[in-house]
Image (cartoon, rainbow, N blue to C red):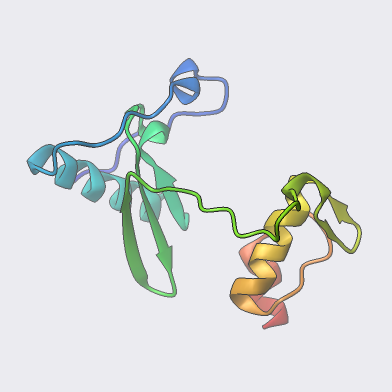
Length: 126
């Protein structure tokens, strides 16, 4: 368990496609521990393996004190037939950001009407 340096925007390692995890051994557990410690030290609420220079499909997210370790996560689109996130709209926000704003509203009940969407905005309105 250690705090590792976070790879910054512009580093080519961030453009590598994460490889699926096929071994759930000691290396993965140590990586997940490092992700959690580095995320908390930053401080942050989520960190992915590529942000530590590891091209793997693994990340950690902490919500209300509960740590979630995600390995080989999959995005499941939950839109009505024929709808597309690029056409989603939230008041004053369009495109992919609107899809995120709508997902935040669905998850929290808090409508964010301006960017960026931050935890502070969610806490103030909840």
